Amino acid sequence: MANTAKIPVPVATPETLHFWEGTKSGELRLQKCDECSHVYFPPRPFCPGCASRKVSIFKASGKATLYSYVINHRPHPAFDGPYSIAVVELEEGPRMMTNIINVDQTPEALILDMPLEVTFKPLSDDIHLPYFQPGGATS
Amino acid sequence: MKPNSVAIVGAAETTELGKIPSLSQLQLHADAALNTLKDAGLGLSDIDGVATAGESPTNVAHYLGITPTWVDGTSVGGCSFMLHVRHAAAAINEGLCETVLITHGESGRSGIGRGMFRGGGGASLQGQFESPYCAMGPPTIFTIPFLRYMKETGTTLEQLATVAVIQREWAAMNPRASFKDPLTVEDVMNERMIAYPFTKLECCLVTDGGGALILTAAARAKDFPHKPVYILGTGESVETPMISQMEDMTTSKAFRVSGAKAFAEAGISHSDVDHLMIYDAFAHLPFYGLEDLGFCRKGEAAGFIEARNTAPGGQLPLNTNGGGLSYMHSGMYGMYALQESVRQLRGTAPAQVDNASISVCHGVGGMFAASGTVIMGNAIP
Image (cartoon, chains in turn purple, orange):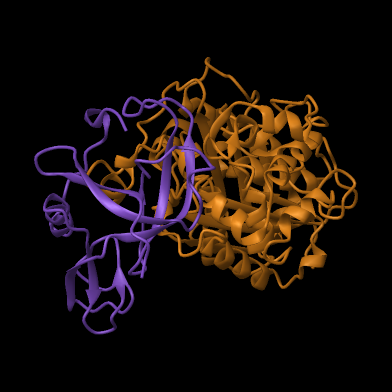
């Protein structure tokens, strides 16, 4: 992973601020409905399962598995060569997009359902971006 | 919509397709509209409804000099035109207007007079939770689900390449197709890798062009120069603007909802279908379409295509213009799929399917974000 200055920086909104405050302090935060227990992502102040506004923020385990991906072969200024654009399934259920880092960016090294763990990199003072790397087998 | 109540009485594409640096995007809309008016034997003053996507219907109506009593600017990506057909049918039945013009024009390749792509910016959900991972447009996003589909269904990369090979066979029969030279599975697989596992030939073209349709009540439809194409059933839905939030990457919820609604409205079964269009922005789309519309069981679409069921001479001719992979793809391809269904039902397609009387035309919007389905017939059942 090369030049983080070339990455489009997220702009937090009131509804997502807790997520970005979390990544800045090394936590991957999810939300859970207090009424129906649904765990969801991306952030919003109500449950997309049952519409309840009674929801809680909690720290996720950071463990995930590789759900699907592509390896982009067209050049991007943030990367030195081909790189993965992936969707991971978090241990708690929700999925999110990411890049799989600290591993060869090849089909041989990127195996669906392989265990992954979250790691964070700063893009700016306020925004630290979650990435995933091999490791952290789910219990 | 009320089945069989509305018909397509005008249909045409822009005079040219491909690379058209001499026309702005708005003029591509107008070129298609004027060709379609001529096709229907109508004048501008006959049009009282305007629908479009990619441009505001205000821009199109004003540019053409139309004062409509009904407009629809539904813009959910490349299938927007399927939704316009559905909405126009409802509007005509409700008496909001009598004669609707649906236009598409897109300077996808030359970029002449093309509006800014309306991304959500860094504060949108995509901007916060997808864009930072440096996806570079549809080739790196729309394609993400396919490795999961392969793992769950046992589909192979050779089978993915076969989609492009067979669509090229259809394109070879079409003088207006962008690419007509025959391909082999090896040709496709050995092409430049764009986003593994998709090579360049498994990604759609980028071209300029346009098309338009005119719809009116079925009761009036026989008064026009061409054989009417009746709207038998329609469907639409949306799922998610974020590919990462698809409920299941092996199937599109929007496809399933839209397709089921259209078949229920039309009251037909799959065996009644003579001709099928499935918007193929990328080579995996026909697999999802065949399965989610119910033509194949889960995991059987690739084998169905490989067995040449959708090829020339097969039982279910699919993407007979060559599709987005070989015919043309300006960005919002749905209009061209609709045009091909109309040509097949009029009996005027370059690769004409014998006795085609019912066509299913299925579109995708965004990247598995939206869907629209239109089932058409050349007779009222």
